[in-house]
Image 1: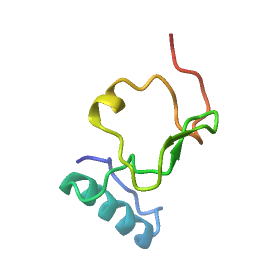
Image 2: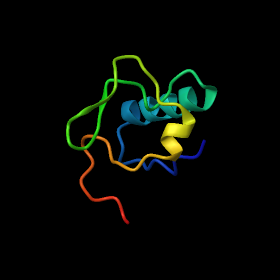
Image 3: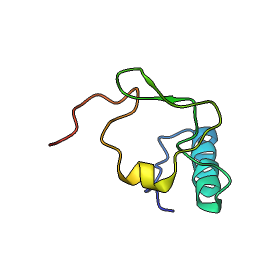
Length: 73
């Protein structure tokens, strides 16, 4: 999985953490959409420990909490 170049301006500890997370996602040992995750409006979407199925991710018509913006129509 490619996340782009991490420059020397990023502290080594943070770079190692990002690379470890990248590797865990690629290995299937970490799913980036694991609850708890709320929708942008704060309503619950995924409960603690629940992961979003690929079909749900492909059809998402909402942003998750912490993302600012509107879904293009």
